Amino acid sequence: MARSRQLRSFALSLVLSSLFGLSRAAGCDCGPAGPSCAYVGRAAVVFAGTVVFSDHDPTLGLRQRTFVKFKIDEAFKGLTPSDKEVWIDPGSFTSCYAEYNVGEHSLVFGYEGDRMPPDTALMSVVPGQPSPKPIPGEIVRNGLPTVYSSPECSGTRSMRSDDPGLNQDLGYLRQFRDRKAGPSIRGRVTEDENFGIFDRDPRPGLKGVTVIATGNGPKRTTTTDNEGFFALEDLRVGSYLLTALLRPYKARWPEREVEVPAAGCGAADFDMFAPGSIDGVLLDSKGKPASNVRVEVLRLNAQGRPIFYAEKKTTTGRDGRYHFTELPHGNFQIGVNVFEAPDPDAPYAPTKWSAGIETSVNLKPGERKLISPFRLPDPLAVRTIAAVVRWPDGRAAQGADLWGDFGDRVAAHGEVKADGSVRMEVLESLTYSVEAKIWTGPPGHREVARTGSMELTPGKDPIHLELTLNKRTQQY
Image (cartoon, rainbow, N blue to C red; front, side):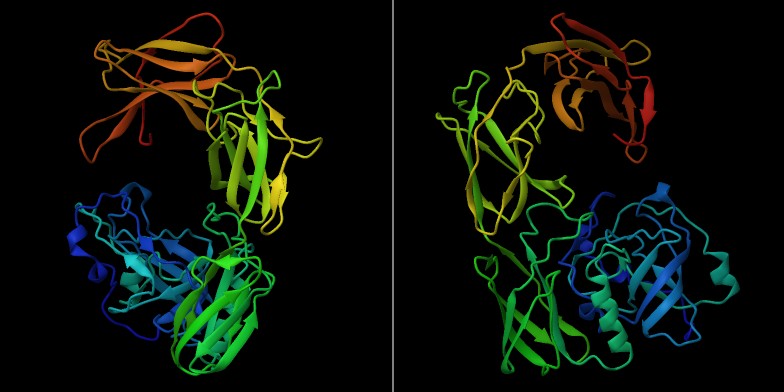
């Protein structure tokens, strides 16, 4: 390394001491991820690298001092040509602890001293006595290098081929390294990115949006590219007001104030939507309007699969009609129990709308669409599962929970009483995974006692189960 000094990490110096009571599950509250130019000014080192060492111990959770070594693939800031590796602290002992896996490629922003990454809204201490770990022998043998901090919210991210912003960021960082990057404003416009979680599916960028900057100098205008990215370059340092325009879309926050620094950029993202709607009629199995039935709409990704948490629900009126509003452009699936599990209040097998071979509804920006009616199957009869749950020594397992899952969704639940008995309602002819389980053990050494899962398809005959909590796992 270019410099040698005491081992350091600023992870503990950036905590909020009033939050010492947070549990191990506490998460880091990050602001919206910005382009790389928003982080490069504060970071001490910036590079693309490959993880070649980590002493992360998954059994210790966040309560550990961890060292990660990167092999430098391409350097952008703070490193000399002779530097071949960098040591990183991933945020030891804090809620912003990040995990890095050997072999993965990352774009890394490393910080030192009291420099804080932008948009780190909350970093808190993880309580409890940390388990001691030896300092990696390689550090001891080679002296004490600088260890930079790169927790969550630092701007560091995995270099994935499906990341639409990666090439944009690498291009900027190369300009920055070569001293060709002047003051600028950069960002992205997405289309209703809050209706669903897009961690594994690239967020939907919006093409053709006009972005206007006014304030410190003449008005500047640009247009977003195919992935929704924009850049206003060669600006004066100072404050600007940004607006984004594209009919029939509207921005959730129409104006953004941006400060352009001498090093790095002013960053501003917009999320826009062109509210569309879907109307239809739900019929019962006899072809009559089905009133007071829960209907769902699911947003689909480019592969036609539902996007996580991109669903809305409504209830049909007396005439069987349903109405979904504030829907973005794209494809949608309409149905009953396609997201929620069937239950006694909606006792129907999952039923999707279809018209011929079409099983999804496409909306253009701002479109209002009326679709053809679809029909429910016959309602399913409600049955009861009665069970007795015991510990291996025969004692009643009071307080344990009996769960009935339909696919990957919880469909039924019952709590075990003092005598070990429990009952829960299910629907005839559907297949459930049934299991009883309970947390047990003292704090810090908790585990789950469970019976193991069994599959059941209720029929007309009564169901009586004898269950024993004879298995142990760490996860519920």
